[in-house]
Length: 339
Image (cartoon, rainbow, N blue to C red; front, side, top):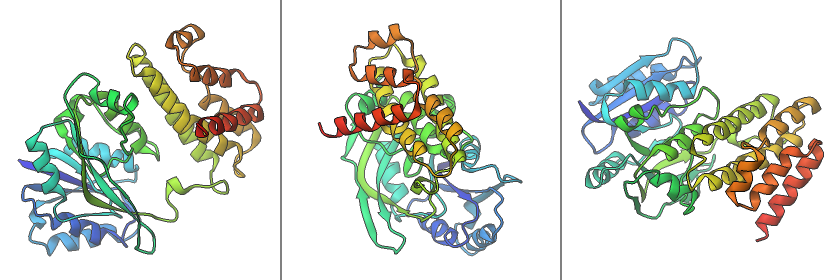
């Protein structure tokens, strides 16, 4: 039995996989399973990975799962959750790398104070290899309690990145709560949303243990010129799913802030982006904007929340014309940013 599984997706990353895999294999921590999940790309990624493993002293600890066909990163992460042999699970994306002491730091913190997951800090590296930014958490323990992490996140404004990587998860916690990714491009968003709502404890640590490398064609770098109907549909589905899923928490004291965050961080900004996209026709724009801005509860329940901002969210749903909705979205963002 391994103490930790590092799960690495392999799909068309022949330029990066060697560096990523070596950063995992060269960890100072001993008891690690290295789980490579072959999502059937079209380049030499797997051949490079297997050559690295064959020539490394820890090659015997490398295990490969072959998907047979390409089914996406969300499915890769789910495969890792289902098949990992470690007590704890760590996701490393195959175009990034980790510090040699990454797993040692996270595991020791986990043993010192067991929690559902630990989130560590990371570097953001530009395409030219220069450091762009450090995302650093303050050292903090969210102690075990019902909805403890949700309350910290939604009511105390505790920051947590939505990325699945650079977090050490208690694997039994993920499995027992059926926390998995959805089969969409933006698999991290709903995974972390689900994580926050189920976790009863966590740690944030200031140690920088991960290097995230920006890629010019990154999904999250989409602009007005490239935000397509396919991408709009993805966000429409994710936002709708989050609102639908949130209903089970309607009697929780963090529910109003949960809905506010869905609108302020996702629904309103992406509605604006969809409206100004050059690649989406008018009919599809209206369909997606109407769906994304649809208020998730009825008038009576909205009033019971006693949150003034929710009047705006509710009203947006009732405005008949897309351009009017977007005008109000932009106005609302301006008013809230000026405060």
